Length: 347
Image (cartoon, rainbow, N blue to C red; front, side):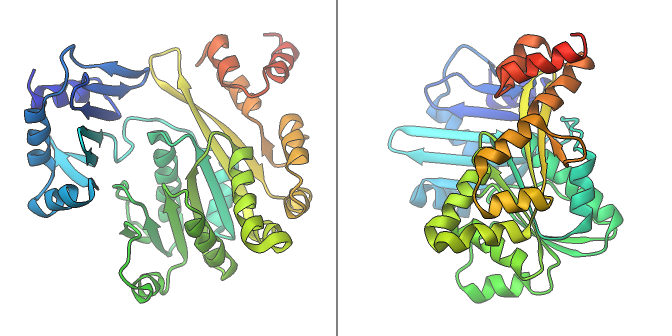
């Protein structure tokens, strides 16, 4: 099976990603997870052909020099994001076949949309780093662009979906600058800045500083859970600013939002959510770095608290028969609490 046939097969499966590693079976990640496209391993000749198909001469030179290149291209009128890695005998390429998020129907919680439309402070978005996280961010930005007039800057090391420009305008950048003045000039006049796909301490601190200056910031990071994302952010601040770090985050954080992917009953990806709306009680707990109390609140989720727990989100999927019990309990961080919620609704 040729390389073109492999990509066409992945496209026919509505795959989100295509993985090619020399010496391993080519794979595609569809709704139910990764699956092999053929039983024979990828060849060096196919690796060279893959480079010829997606990289120009400059990008090939960068790959040869640094071992890594990221960007975007097109295939069969479809925008594709690519990431090539080459070092010693390891040759790996990952193609994002769903850059524009067309294959995933994700319902972003209303409270998240409402908070983003207010355009105040810092919104923290976390997830395990799957394509659905970018899709949710893309949907949020599209909705904002439809309803608000502003200038937004999107920093992302990978190809980011092109946002429809109705009332708002967006600039896209990989975030690498030769001089600080270049970054400052790009951000001049920006009402909103988005950081997608970053996890280093310096980028988070830059996002925080922008929020403190009155710029609306969305910081999207890879983390296994919402509490873990908060813990890492607070840890970075405490290490740098000691007891003065947490109050800085507490002052500007307006919402923390996490998304979790799982296999659904109808051969599709399902997404559960966690939402932490930062009200005065939560703000005080963040300021004192009382994460245990925040986690306890997120399990109980009192009425009108502005919280959506992971178990509450899973319960809604179970009621709508979108996931099975086994998947829901495997996804939950507190199966006993989920079991209690199920008993309350008679499941």
